[in-house]
Length: 363
Image 1 (spheres, rainbow, N blue to C red):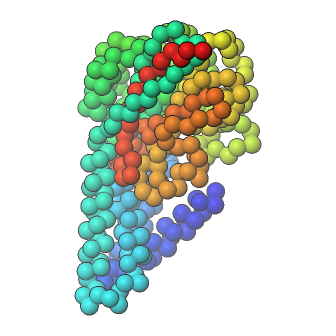
Image 2 (cartoon, rainbow, N blue to C red; image 1 turned 90 degrees about the vertical axis):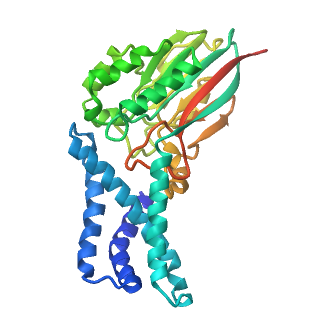
Image 3 (cartoon, helix red, strand yellow; image 1 turned 135 degrees about the vertical axis):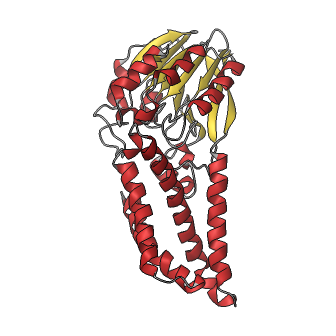
């Protein structure tokens, strides 16, 4: 909450500061016009996200969402660059250099981040698991975010990776879709080309749209939906949890129900002599999973912070936000996610597909 208040205060200051600073450096006139434009970008972006306009089944809304997202990030970078270089003003005879430089660098960062967000990296993990009788390959893909920012072309690239990897099963760990514009049977029919078993757990974004229609399309695409239940496959107890909080005490800015891992996980009966995997969209409740003798927990949700300065701030909400962690005997893998949200930018992170190779461990 404190970070949110600080962020809002900085945004308010930026709306005042940026136009006046550019007036000083570049001689901008009619500063009030630039103030209005700044307010339109900031307020428009925040309304688009907070009011769920990005979830509409509307091409114009999708275009506005992406355009405002890019402009918002540009504005924030411009604010910080102007602020950081402010003390250097006296060192430059031509003050225009500072203004032009800040605008150019901000634009280049946004362009680079946008291009970087169109690709993904493949991360391999090899894990020894006790009680496993055969090697198992899993493709873990949370946060594709099919919708205004991701469509058929991007999905085909992901499915091509799955086909080449030939996994035993695929886990779409939440936020598979985030907008009603993506709820088209022809798009979801592409998943039927996957030869491996496919499983899905809900993320928070599936709750912000037409949830029933999304789940129906996912089920019709031969993807099994796991909502706080267990299935056995390839000698593994696979537990897929509904999106939920860690416990009653921990604050969750994206809470969509009153369920908790602390209460729900112990209700799922399992054999402690068999290997188990817990799949939950968000990396929360890890200590409760470890207490239940889970061998491996898979999560996403954080996007690794997605772009600077989120890459610095994400650790304050999610101490375990990207990569591999060990909690007692349990391994936690947190993906940066295969897609983007808010702004189609990746700066300091990459879209990620995780390949998890489970290997029998001699006892």
